[in-house]
Amino acid sequence: MKEKQGQLREEVKQLLAQAEAADEEEDRRYGNKPGDELPEEWQRRETRLARIQQAKKVVEQRAREKVAAEGKSGEEVKKAKPADKGQYNFTHPDSRMMKGADGFVQGYNAQAAVEPEMGLIVGQLVPQAANDQEQLKPMLTAIEQQWGQRPKSILADSGCCSEENLKHLEAADEPEKKIEGYIARGKQKHGEYRQPCKRGPLAKGATLVDGMKRKLQTKAGKAVYAARKCVVEPVFGQIKQARGFRQFVLRGIHKVNGEWALVCLSHNIRRLHAAQQA
Image (cartoon, rainbow, N blue to C red; front, top):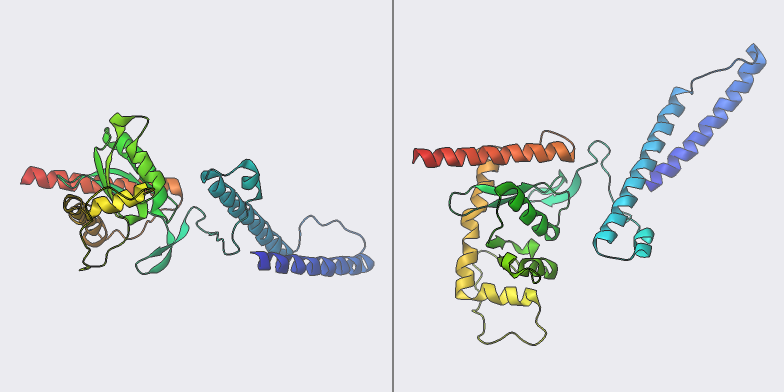
């Protein structure tokens, strides 16, 4: 956008000079007559330039919001600047560039929480961030709002493992709201063998993340977390592979949220129907 903005300004400047010269020539030949419309070529460039300027404002605002979400001071928020590779999609501005299994795509990060007994989706949302670290708290809120109760325990992959998220699960100020968490510390390759955890207390100064790593290395922790591949992964497999839902057909974050909610609702209806037939 920076390069194109300078190029468009130069082209507009040249077109203005050409228009002025043509206007003087026409005035000399035909007299001074008022014209209400700009030349078509100039209109196109002016419109593109205005769209680029608006896009830059949006990208800059996103950078400030990101810094504000990190708890930085007001002065740091004001000085926040987007990265030179910051992106904006002109045809679908609510979407974001994300890395998927097949490479980078322009899209959203659809999330779902699944209960283990019947495989029902108990919470769903569509954030615009590719990183899952910021999605655990919103998902817990979604579960309470959509399912009507707070979970007693939760399994999540390594993308959600952070000190902030683990503190939130501990709920130090409200012990009755504590959630037993089983969140992977890092990705484990298929067939990779991990040594069992050493006995005894954690080392002095150990973090909550260190504690979670130790927890999942215990025999009980491994057994609990192993259930995740039998609870959540099949649901996404059924939605994407069996039903062929691999991309949203609507645009805009509100419409996409509605579309994903409908997909999750249809999954639950199928699961309930299958349970009645059993």
